[in-house]
Image 1 (tube, rainbow, N blue to C red):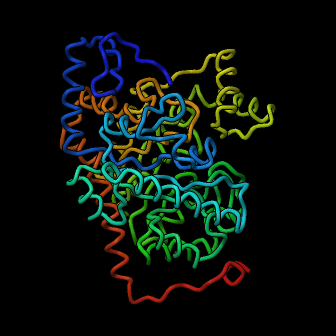
Image 2 (image 1 turned 30 degrees about the vertical axis):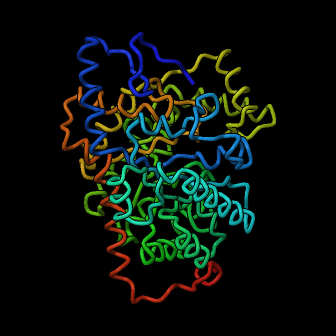
Length: 421
């Protein structure tokens, strides 16, 4: 991870970013003071952190070897001290597995990821609290714990089984991203060639069953047509756990304006991500070359093991990387607020799921820098409290309300062959 770029020491372990052009150190320090005070009352609920996958890849879930109760900055974006320094009060831990894990292997690996999150909560009960509902999130905050929720990243984790979907929910998973980077038989991904042109009939049934059980439909990673189909079918608010604005950076992983504009009627929340290749246009072509270099070295493009990161750092040294900054992320949030409205945006950093991060947002301690940037742009503290905490709690509460209204509807036993013959 990068070292701080200014001379003044970090406060409570958080990086202090350099003053922007025309901004004095005193002004910057005042904005950071206000940001930290706001986060003490309305902490960040981050929509996506891949710590469980990093622990799987790096140490096979040996939590003694990667004890997040100690400083892990040489290995991870995340540890407990930096979560506290960043003002994080709620975290959706991704129980992601790669799409080359197929069928029952994907299901088993997802269960292992869930087991990891539960092991973390059990290991650090004075810091983390498992949250299965919006009320649990509020209770965790009132007790000074970080509310720990889970999100499954990719419908391949249910192996085309609605019963498996229900089982994941019973184990505590509160959102499922419909796809990851590759298409499913029932839904198109943003980064694959269109086949279904959105959702198939079975895909629509997946959305309806998620509504029934109270699991948020996460539309990060899906194609724009899948987004539109899901918004047409759902009767509950949707989530974008880690996606930014396509109008600001034209990457297929981002959200088109016509979809952002639908969120007020749906009630959903779009959580801006920090991944440079999704937020900085100049980083897109660079990342494609970096991915090709990883594959040429026999590694998966998303490999963040020490071996993978060594290859990435060597490529970066020979090919200087276009640098995203806190201001880059703020530009996306400005646009998302303008199009979707303040009640429909949030933050989903994707820490420990990306090799590179923006300057000033190197790890989970960096959120005060982003809040300070937005304060400097004139965002009110009332608006920022929605961005950091209230919107995320509300969207889960609304999904729970829809589920209660559907409690008399029996579980779906539909199958992929039945609906998509």
